[in-house]
Amino acid sequence: MSELDFENPHYCPVYDKVIDIDLCYETLMCLNCFFKISSVKELNDIEDIDNARKICDHCEYSKL
Image (cartoon, rainbow, N blue to C red; front, top):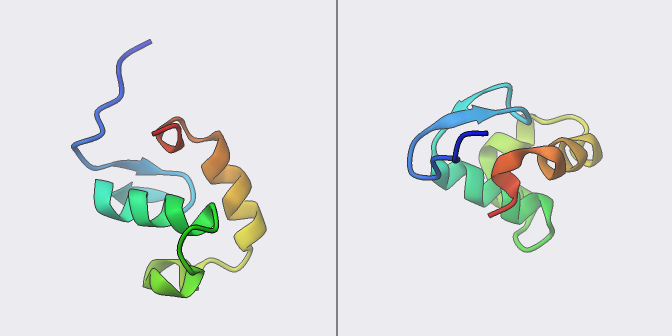
C-alpha cells in the first residue's frame, strides 16, 4: 500500500473528480458537521448529503 499524498490534488469520490487538498478538508469538515454544508458551494450541487457522508467516511483521505 502506498503512502497518501495529502499535499497534492487527488480524486474525490464525493465529487467524482480530482480536487485540491483545501476543498477536501473543507468538505470533510462539512460532512462531519464541523462546518455548515452551505459554507462550501461545491456541496450545494450534491443531492444526497447523507450518501456523500458515507462516501467520504470510506475515503482513505478522510482519515486525516
